Image 1 (cartoon, one colour):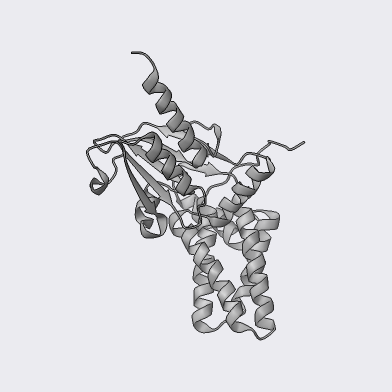
Image 2 (cartoon, one colour):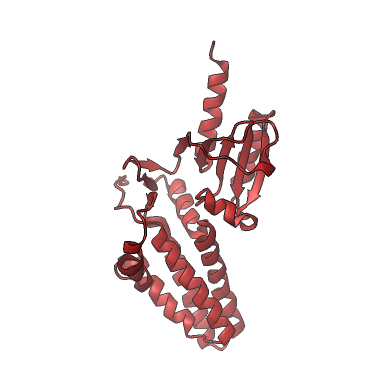
Amino acid sequence: MTSTQAPAPIDPRGPRTNQAVLSCALVIGFVLGAQWVAPLFAVVLFLGAAFGASYGPVLRFFQVVIKPRLSPPSELEDPRPPRFAASVGVVFLTAASAAFAAGASTFGWVLSLIVAGLAALAAISGICVGCEMYVLLVRLRGGVRVVTVDRSTGHGASARDIHHGGDTMIPAEFRDGAPVWLVFTTQYCAVCPRIVEEIRTKRPDDAVHILDVADHTALAASYRVRRAPTVLRADASGLVLSRLSGADAVLVELEALATTEILPA
């Protein structure tokens, strides 16, 4: 029987700090030709992935030095996806270290820079490819839920959460005088094209804008986009009505809108 008990949630800024340091270290190592950076950070990632944030040097530094100086996070996240992502990084950097030891420095740097690029993407935009891999694997095996915790309510919620209301406006360039859907996606999102097609099919009169997070990092960060797809649904004036995280949330929202429209007045 698969357990549905979720571990204690964590501050998502910790893993993002870890990813930022990792990315910078690998790029600097590449520029300086310091091959020892790969095995060093393979160990750093392994400690955090295997034993938790208290044992990862960068994560521990965040907890002890940085976090006390920050305001409380707006939400917490499940620690399992970032730990899985770190494990993937360990595999890549271990392979890179072996390549360096074997004299295949070009291959070693290719592997290292792949890790650096994905870590930078996660640190800047919150889109964590390794985390999405974890969510996909969990769904395929029918396992435990991945949870986030809304700080305002303290309640755990699945990755299908739908957040309604607020006073946020979408940028003026996306206001078309009709209801608008902003779909944040990445090149790694296999389900995003299907979600876009679902929106266009079920909401033919609405405007749909597809935004690659890599090209809209600042905008994605402002809306706390942490996975793909993340969709903002706005009215004709540009007021955000819903923030939908994940494909399931979008499908639920579309179904709810269809049900509302066929109800008698």
